[in-house]
Structure formats: structure tokens, C-alpha cells
Length: 47
Image 1 (tube, one colour):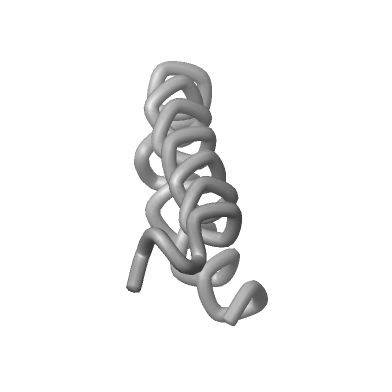
Image 2 (cartoon, rainbow, N blue to C red):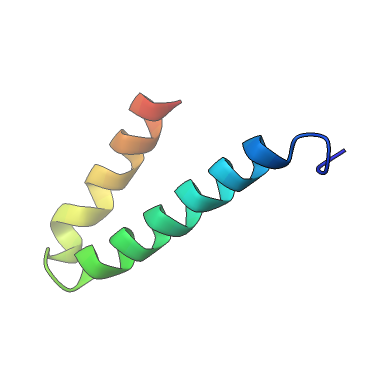
């Protein structure tokens, strides 16, 4: 099934990896008190 949708799968993987890397980098920039409430809002908007 994944082979049939390889392009879609690769786009989803790339987005997930990019989001994980950027999220990890933001942990060092923003305080947890700011970042933790913002992340659920981003997820709600993107859903």
C-alpha cells in the first residue's frame, strides 16, 4: 500500500522530519512556558 502511494508517503515523512527538527530547535530559543501552549494551537489550526 505504501509503495503505491510512495510520493505521498515521502512528502509526509519529509514534513514530519522537518517539523521535529524545527520543534527541537525552538526548544532552545523559546521558554517552555511560551512554547507548550502554542504547540496545541498550531496542531488545532493545522487539523
